[in-house]
Amino acid sequence: MTSETVIEVSGLHKAFGELEVLKGVDLDVRRGQVVCIIGPSGSGKSTLLRCVNLLEEPNSGKVVVNGHELTDEDCDLDGARRSIGMVFQSFNLFAHLSVLNNLTVAQRKVLKRNKEDAERIARDNLKKVGLAEKESSMPAQLSGGQQQRVAIARALSMEPDVMLFDEPTSALDPELVGDVLSVMRQLAEEGMTMLVVTHEMQFAREVADKVLFMDGGVVVEQGPPSQVIGNPRHKRTQTFLSRVLNPTHVDE
Image (cartoon, rainbow, N blue to C red; front, side):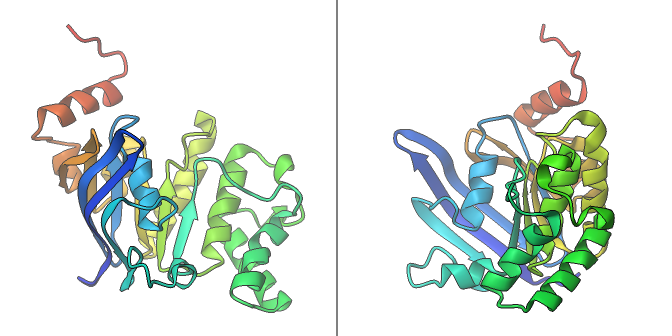
């Protein structure tokens, strides 16, 4: 892993009307790092992730990805986004297209690949996520976990430098979560740069190079998982983790 910074967020503010969701967030991700963002619902995690590729436009602050300042009004957003893969909570597959066509449509339209190359790359990525035999299936014929793995394969088929994951397992039945996390672990081992919003503490503990704990629109604490999850310094982090890691915990 190099020390090259691939994602740099500084002074990020985002409000929806009167509601200030992000209150000056700073974040950096180096090439090959896995950075996990944890925190309670409503803390601004998903909004932060969506601001990284400008699906949400910040009110102020700066976002730089792969040397492109996305918050610069002169930035070629479509060009900059080609190096960023995004996987959502809901799988966002095209219901009327087969699995294979879900993986090839953006390759052909955005990257201008020919049909043969697009299908070859798609099949390679379906194999990577363990779904080579599902290329002719329609999304409705797949389980939620399979659909999410297809969504990951679709993002990978665009050959991104960075992958953003917005709570990729939150919509899945518990028994399906492991298959998706296994694919993500494999990507981490292969050196993919990943920014992951997640409630999966064990994944964050084992796979992340750095963990950010957010609450109330700010980064309360960040550092290696052994510190943030294993030995948190801030009371707010301690309280959150005690509830998440011990769901039967009842406040006095």
